[in-house]
Length: 264
Image 1: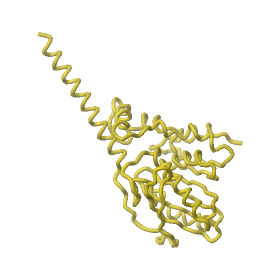
Image 2: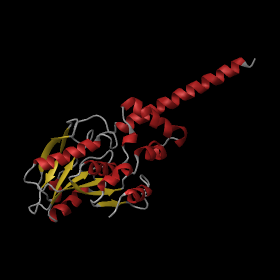
Image 3: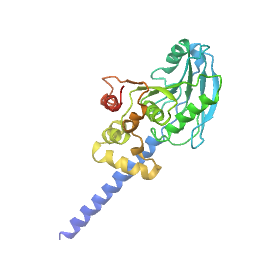
Image 4: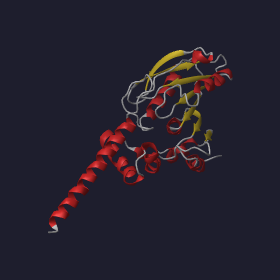
């Protein structure tokens, strides 16, 4: 008499488990394949002359596209690093007016689309794991243009801020990094915040999505840990910017990075 209810309970638990895994896989796939944001304007909208440019990511040679804004003073070259789901415009900042200020103060500015964003190639957004190759490719491109000041600073936002720290730590020629609202460690950030992104209950979905997504996409969030490499920026300026009311990436992330940065 007890075997039938037990079998039904076991079947219900199995179906629940399959449902959780299925939903987690669907969510993880969508998060790594966000819809592309089309470009809405050009630097001409803020009175800037610009050059459309193409270059490739370091290591895997993915085709990337962007805009180069040149300043006659050529004091420095700033490469901007946009956030998750954005493009080279980073319209929520907004970035183009900021780029104009940089140009007016004698700096060249390179704006570009990460893989799977804007007009660049690629079909996967890895939240920093592969985007660091794109940013390093941008550094290589600046160095290939002899007329540009080879002294490079990276200026990133959110995902792009964390990627800027990773790239600066990997590339000694980067002179400085400005990171606006970075996360300190992707695995810990996702474990705590998947529910914020998805609207699903943190238990059991946060850890399940994090377990299933690498199987589906090959991504390894543990490789994306700015706090683990920020020490490689020793001797170079790092400016961390973070709003106290940031609900997407808690300010504690920047404080953790500040503590790990070996200031002179």
